[in-house]
Length: 304
Length: 304
View 1 (cartoon, one colour):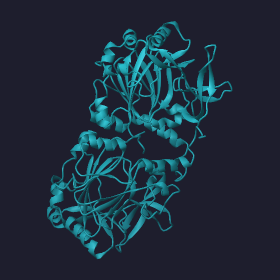
View 2 (tube, chains in turn red, brown; view 1 turned 30 degrees about the vertical axis):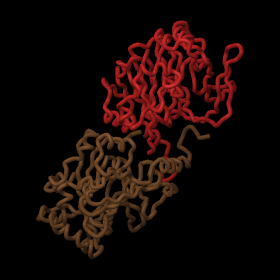
View 3 (cartoon, chains in turn green, red; view 1 turned 90 degrees about the horizontal axis):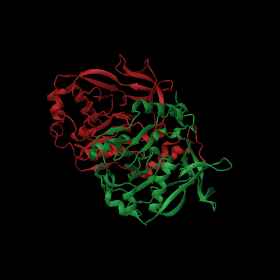
View 4 (cartoon, chains in turn green, purple; view 1 turned 90 degrees about the vertical axis):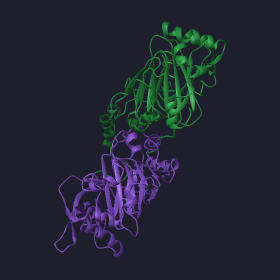
């Protein structure tokens, strides 16, 4: 007999994780064309991701962007670049004493052509330090507004279904040395792959017990005079953040073995719907520079 | 700092309950016309109930059913009637030793005209024993198929949105002495009030900790030779069932005070969408016999 008050027994968490696996496919649905607003809303209601293969194949960005056209479009423009020693921006990392901190990247301004040359050439010559343009602050309608006319100004099926225009439209540029740590957002997200490929490892909100969320002290990478980096603690509240790496299994809890991550790889022109409150971990693809267009549309969080 | 494995601390349950109240209105939305499939799907996605006032006002059933027309339509038909001493079919009740059991009603066959006379006249002369026709076994397409042409054969906006025809269409007939104990279903439900009124007390799935679910031994009412009832235990597994009464506050847990039930009253021709996994407790309305048409459309359970 279950206790009727207080926290649930331990094995109810295992049951939640395994029942989810039994009731849901181990893959994201793959659509061959964009959904209608109603079809999309069914995925929102079921809180399940899907991929639209080649859904953005006709976008000007998909058809025309490459290192050389981007350099031409953004020549002499100074852009904000996130720099980290190992490609781990906004991620948990241990300090010298072995304490896990939530570490933000070092940010510096750089001319776009220098940045994009660094990112694309590094792909060939190997790791040194990792630079990327981060998807923050609605950057495609601000810092990169020159490029905004090359993408659709919203995703009609999502706008109609959610009755909201995109809250933020972000451009991300990086290479295969960049990873995004396992994290979640309160927003409905649609990712559009413009150049190259990107791999996502996805976990539903029900897998919370598997991700080993910890309250981490905030820190940042700071560039030293010798060009290297050090980690510096910052003032501020602890940040709740997942510390499990589903790929290496580092940071696993007793429950992680029961979670079954979805593995999704986007190719050029593909779209991914990532539902609010899902966990995602992203990996840059191989061999060539990546541009990734992440479109975020805010929808009220599911609350029940 | 939160622990990062094991069950959540006690107060996370209070936080869940109070956050839900902060993010959601304390009432169900009231629509003045039927929603489109997309509008309906938004409610499914948000897992929120709504009422369509007079949505079924044009149905033949709403326009023509009363005690006399129903008797004419079903004259001499033998129907299955659920009988209980206090109007509490399929509900927790204490046996002589004070143990709470899950008690099913006594069922007997009766001519429809006798049943409906009993139900309608009892409304005037007071309680004796409580009889009702229960919404089970898709009864409007089986036992009461004579009446089926008087209602719409499905609800188009729900059928289109959920891509499923109704799994079961049920008729319920009772009076103000009948109550339905707080319970939940795995199905998306649409209730249509044909005659009289009915009051619902509704709780979202997130209020689970408030409903005091217990594992109850099964039992049934059995009619004795003297016409009265006794409770008889049955073989079978314990049944998980809510034991909180949000109206009287009997059976409250330490969390019940934080739950804020929605109170909805349906009048003739009104529809109520009750999302899957919500808890509902129903009360017959006053003064006149009630017919209540409950339409259940199966949709895969939300699993995350």
